[in-house]
Image 1: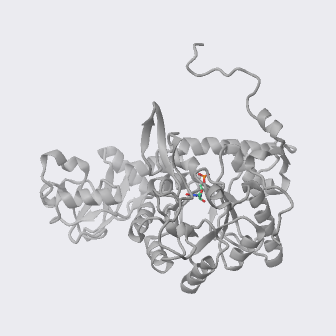
Image 2: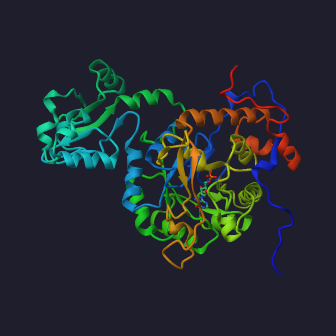
Length: 501
Ligand code: IMP
């Protein structure tokens, strides 16, 4: 006979936190949101990777491109660049994030003087960067001959056939600085000469790096940014259980910091095979999360297979129709609570702590705090990030309201059949996600800071200064359907913003 779970499964909306004792020292500004990203022996060593804020962005076409990855790393989180694109395109996105860093940036747009304007435009389209170095051999460390920026050409007045040598700004007209120049001096030169980019050149005349004005401004304002040991932004990427033997090496070569197997159902032998292949070829040097699971058995399976973190959630995503189409899933809160308990038991038995990521279904900011209190080490968000300027999707005006497009990886639009692959055919036979709009919400930075201010505030109310402390001290209560109604403004007539005051 089939197994019946003894209790109903619940969503975040059905829970509330009950405040604990708040001491004078327990203030939002004292709260640390640092959290482990990959497995480690807790109490014995530090995790090889951590997040400065407990947020990662979903492995989705409408969410995690290189722009969002940079913006999120600046705030202290990590993006997982979507895998439902060609290996080359995904690796190029990762490389763009890695080459974009505050300070000295190795040039990723380089061209020879014999190339044409059309080549410059194609390169700009590919890299998204408008400063192109002209070097003798077209490499990032070739002899510098000049640079091309959008000020050097006027597309409407040119054919595209013009040679770079004819319209570039040549070396003799450029302000450059010698190798070894400090960032402070480089920024002074940029300021004095009103430059956007300063090429750093070796004694032999070879290009070493650029220093960009915009990087410096951003660097100053971002205390939480997440950098690797070379001061480059940390970035993740999604892989699948089909083409990992080609995709993983390309992503590693591009400089990716952490991978995740992106699948709608992770309690699956294919995930084991993929994890084994990665361990066989890279040992522990390549970090890789796996998922998604919604119970203790699924967690233990992936933890035993060596996953660096485990993602929880099936059917709770905002664009998800898996529960309707397949009848599979579990209330996100219940799934998370069970998996977090399994994670703690695994730690007691093995001494290894495997971080848990709650993926999907975060609707309100306080759901993040609830997820952390229920045992998540960090959360993955799709809809939340899709609303921002930096997400890859279009901003559109829908009946006078600005929206961003947001579509599921299981929708026809994304055609990410590998995510839903059970080994039968190379196409989606039915959709598990929808194509939708979400209200446009402006820049990522403002929103993330506001969201995290709320998380810190709630943590203070619970008497917790760190995420582990919250997990230990939090007291949660299920609420009845009647009290859910009470949770919003009620029994008042709300004023709309366009009413006269
Ligand atoms: P959201 O934050 O509620 O929008 O959920 C995002 C999560 O939904 C992703 O991280 C995926 O786990 C999941 N997801 C993405 N695309 C689909 C889909 O087409 N169907 C079902 N789930 C999806």
